[in-house]
Length: 185
Image (cartoon, rainbow, N blue to C red):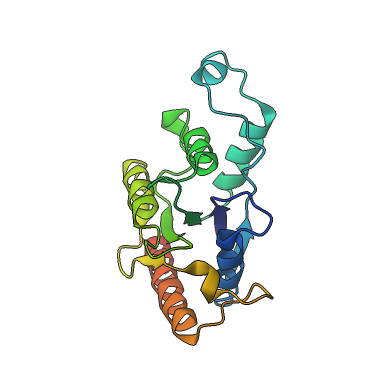
């Protein structure tokens, strides 16, 4: 069983990112287990806690949890041409201490979204820069940017556009191939 952690970069209860993540989680084949890992309650990263050997319990729990997963799917909105602070905070917490980063050498994939026409390009690429630094193997193609995300979701939270579903299935299949190849090495 390959375990995929899903990190959602929005805290809103009606978050488009959370709805997209749930739709995408259903596209993984048998043999893959996905789970959304909550990040909203993580205290802000402060290196002093690690340096003093006294990290908050929520950091320790988060770090241990992420280590249990084989790969990570990031689903994020774009805030101010970048990733939301809550997601960056979770990434920073997982990256420390540097020699024990929970991200090191894990396959990853990114889906960014935006309610307007911009599609989350800035968030996707800012996040990608961090993941490369962490030695994560990131899906390169297809890149997943979802513009006008509100129009892609029905009232039931399901994606209502067959072309988008097919595209996301291709994206998931590519991520599955990356994870399978990675696991085989």
